[in-house]
Length: 288
Length: 342
Image (cartoon, rainbow over all chains, first blue to last red; front, side):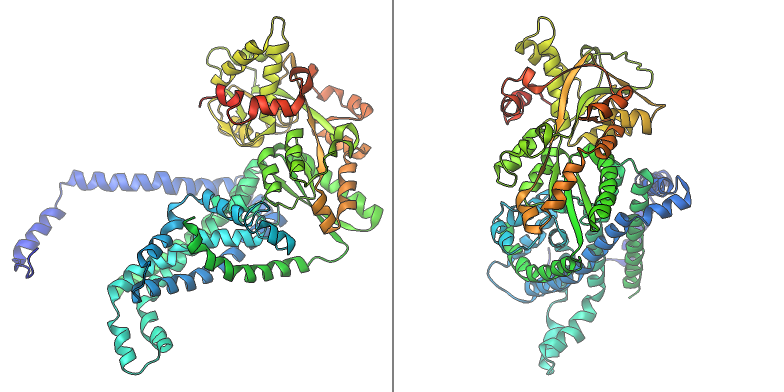
């Protein structure tokens, strides 16, 4: 690459762009058709089917399935899990992103790799890690038993597993952005006499807020939807340690199709709300 | 190992917070409310739903105490592993002895658990039968018919499911005991049988779902109670039960998890709960769910809803009983591993 870019003739550029945009009609239409049919086949159809099955025995059956004690307990547990893990991971994510993009230290690249670890290992393995750590025969098992602290097969285990699985979302959103931003604005604030805390709130947060919110939304979606890791540490106690995704499976295996799909429809609705919020954020960000 | 540096700070911070949280949850239970957890196998869901409500009512009348019975279901061997890993079950209700022996070997159940209750601590039995599509289009009548032509047979994984271990041993016993049968012939037959099995699921219920929801397979091998549940209650117009000439008697034993009930102070209610299974009321519920009750009168009253066939026990086909069957057939590298190649 040359150090100084060659001047480009703007007219040429426009012409090139037009050529690119003027793919033959059949190319354009077939690409659109492929995309649309793919989305309808693999997203709209299953989503419609969930709703259809949930209401297959009428609104009353749907409502009574949702108002079962076990279903309500599953909804509560799912919300509690998200309520604990999302704020914690937001704090951890910002801390990690800050550490990685603002400081130089030994093992930085190792830390960056480790943040991605929950993405790269299978959720089942993530769950098993906690069984190996906190199970009765695990590293801390004896100590926990002696002190009567329940982690695995109880709410804390479910929260821990979810925390682990959703750890990367916020940090992954922030790191590239904060790297790109550099430290100039913060240095300016500091040199003008602002303290560290004030700099963070007045300079850093406004710059990263959209990416942060986006990361929080993704984190939340996964926290509510996680199945594999939670399934390993749950113990499947009805009305106690079943989250919504697990409750869907329990109902399905009980031949309670309406119950299974009614619970699934709640999960789907939560996902749709998340998607709408996400699109709204993207749209807002695009307008800036 | 890689996870340690990442996890340790999370764990330290969260343990305190979550410990507090669980304390809050535990504190909300009042003194006279008992809550016991029954960890069970996959296809006992409907049975224990009814047993639990009947027992709860009886216990309230008898003692004035409210008892809540929580349920957890999955493949029986997976459930035993969870109990060993710390799932705090007050009682386990399994479908065969090895799973309870495994838990007992870790000191969680007393070694002589078989003498804790009558009938070797097994309140009911079942057996392995076939479920086929309505009208039996493939004309499957006995074990030999399963391996004919391109018949597809569905069952769960003998490694994780007690239900499937009985199916496997029933097939083995059939070939071993028939005129001219031998261990070699039995091995050949079971090898043939598993060539007709396209997929193995973890638990018995998952296998049923493969058969009835996904419409896969010509015959499902499962417990009599599961087959009748489907054929009578859920799909009378879609499935038929086929009773083979002979099959295995499947004891379903139960046990109390001693350290848990002693710690929680639930021994009395847990023992009464399992004891309830032998009462007339309990045996009646058992029979209604197509399990074979131990009480001869109640069994006779429901005789028409059980298959009539010649039953053999595990000791008839494996001299050393379950420990030997486990060793020869289902251990890692055992006969099942040798004959089943997916």
